Image 1 (cartoon, helix red, strand yellow):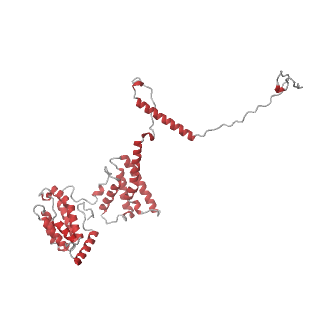
Image 2 (tube, rainbow, N blue to C red):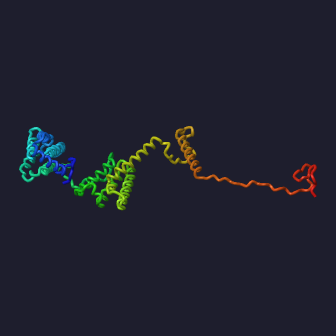
Amino acid sequence: MIKNRSGDKWHSNSIYLKEILTQWIEARTLQRTKGKSKDSTTALNTLENLKFHSDLRAGDDTTKMAEGWETVRLTFIRAITNALTHGCNWMEILACLHVCSRALKTGQQRVRSIVVTATKDTSLCCSPVLHAMVIVAKLDSSSSLGVPGYSRETPSAAWEACVSRLPGEDALTLANHVFDSYLQKIGDDIHHRTIWSNEQYASEINTRTANCLGNDVSDPARGRANHHQFTLRWHKAQQRIRSGGGKVQEMSNTYIASHHIQTFELANDAVNVFNAQHPSSSTPKRVAAVQPPSSTSPAPSQRDDGDLHKIVAALSKQMSTLQTSTKKTLTPTVAVTTPHIPSAPAPQRGGGKGDRSTNTGRGGRRQP
């Protein structure tokens, strides 16, 4: 039988657990040496005053009876567990159950019948914790017979139902649900840390988790991104472990979901919030070329001035961005030219008056 410590699942073992058995043995040993404690007396009184839901007395209405047992089931389990862990005598516990089940207004005939049968089972009476689990299992079976939603399911039913991420479900909750469903499917009592040493188990769990993240009903785009991110982190952890540089726990679906996927989603949410609050800081969308007005187009005076201003602003921003990028990428070229030094003119004969360049002016000597 599948273990369920929370006690919220039908047809599962919520009592016959190692910790409860250990506490019962220690409390019984202490009670035999020091006598009955005040806590054990209180626990027995709680059992004796237990009240069953009125739907449990619905007669032939099996659905109401199942709902009635669902209402009181968890209280019933906790009351028995509390009495066991405080070292109460098992026959006293059965006697208290018999008293509360036969009460005229708050009792239940089916519970009374099962308790009476239990008192006659001498073999199981020697193992109180196991016997308590059997009583709860009988009540589950008798209350759920033929009732949809309460009847016993196959161990793989929950695993087969893990196909998508439900609206409002966070990544870590999804990973835990996939992991618990797989443990229920294989039915092995494997510790949650050692299961990742088995490559087959790890591959099946992580593949299903990635697929569920990818099949995101409320946000398909987020689902595609998370599927890629989860698969990437899983294979990176796998490579580190094979090379001897990683821990086995890093490959677990809950570790990846809590350390990577949730962080990835928070970062994306922060970016989306920033873009929503600062729309001007985001990259402008490409603006289509402005077409000349057709015969059916409204006159310029009739157009929406706001739209026109938006188009002009976007085009101006694109031009400014283009100019900035051009300045950064292009290196200005400086032309270095050699200054022109004119050569001396050739001497001429018969220069005119005042021609100093040829030294033929007044007071100058005529060249031969």
